[in-house]
Image (tube, rainbow, N blue to C red; front, side, top):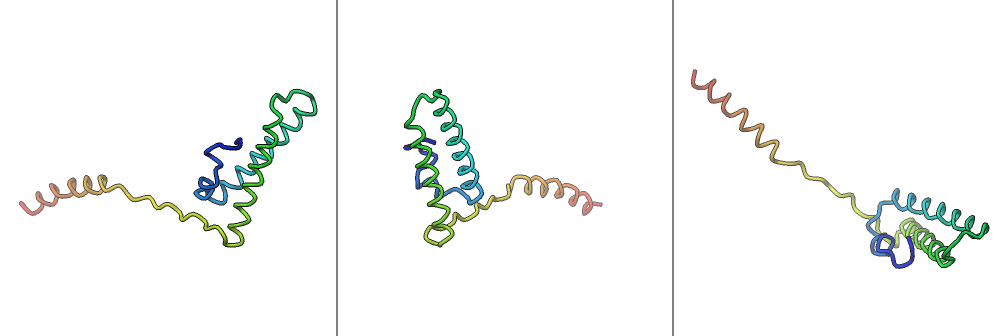
Length: 104
């Protein structure tokens, strides 16, 4: 979740649903807590990571708030199409049985 990650780029955040944004925010806050703990104990390797995570959190809060205000559109739910192959197989299975009934 560092700066420049494609996963949390502003264009990618537009495709996330509200529930996923909240989940990403929770993960980022947890990571920031762990980084601060590592910093306090002297175990942190990269202090720039704290800055990156803070920016990710701010970016997530911004997208959430923009959606609340109606500035940014909520993504439309993706509709899944039913597979037609199963229906065709069912029709084929019924056709021979119907033909036998007519032949009698």
